[in-house]
Image (cartoon, rainbow, N blue to C red; front, side, top):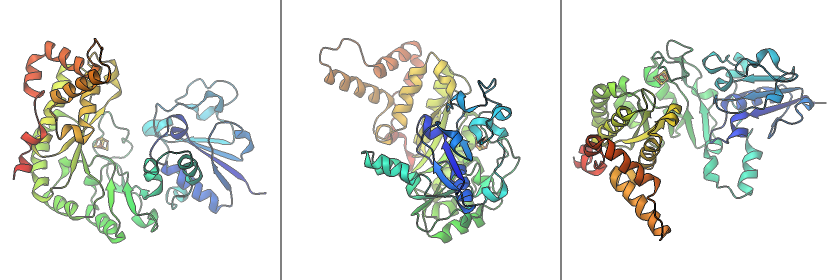
Length: 388
Ligand code: SF4
């Protein structure tokens, strides 16, 4: 009888996720080759009926039931390796953060099993969910062309390596039947193999994209010229994590705009350096710089924002920025006023202002100078690039 392998994508089971777990797909492919009967499991029940169960999670906040850990309660969920049932293996940054072990070489370098999630997705689509929700599972070849990053930002999980190195040749994860490619590289811009990897990606003939924010601080004229010319899928996404980088990022965006007029987005990390009015001001200042270069901010909220008395401000700024149809057409004030209008239209006899509008009013009352400087900025007006 064929041995049975169960795979649990813990992030999928807990919150649902739009991204397939690459490690799970590689494990699946490897064990299928070894003759195992592999299934993606949709619960933590009956794990004893499998010869082997792999549980992988990417996010530390993903919940995994304590019952999977050995006989009774595992004392330290962060170090559960001593207390696993014998047939269970766990892995991924969600369990071990930057100390996660690499997959064995033969698994790491195996072509992923792109069919692992097929039944799960077919079921979802059959039950009325849109196919568009699952394009990451269905339409992409997925991999890391490189790994590693030398920067070691405090908030980032990528601290394991000191440099950027080739992780997988593109052909290792490229599936001709998939229309697109996406890459999870940590810091592709720092790769000494930047040009040859781009050559390999171009040779596939497929559009591709890097999903992590590219490090624009490392942009050069040559890199900008090459990146701008490729068949890139979707927005170019860079990162603007700290206000201290505003001079270098402004220079690099100017350089980028010499070569590319394509839609460009920058992740804007908020709630990390602090969670006060200074952080709010710095967030607006970064948004203002991005408007100038015709770029779109994408607000990333660090967990600590939830403990801020400006929590609602962070939420409203993110709602305004992260939907291009709003930020491209409205100032922050106009966006909040529109929300209020809609709120009153929906509930005619309402007494209280909507949360969005009230948040803006409260902040403006307390910090009129910040409001005066930023609340009325409009992407269309500041965008020097569009005017050219
Ligand atoms: S540059 Fe990016 S990948 Fe590198 S440590 Fe910072 S956040 Fe992480």
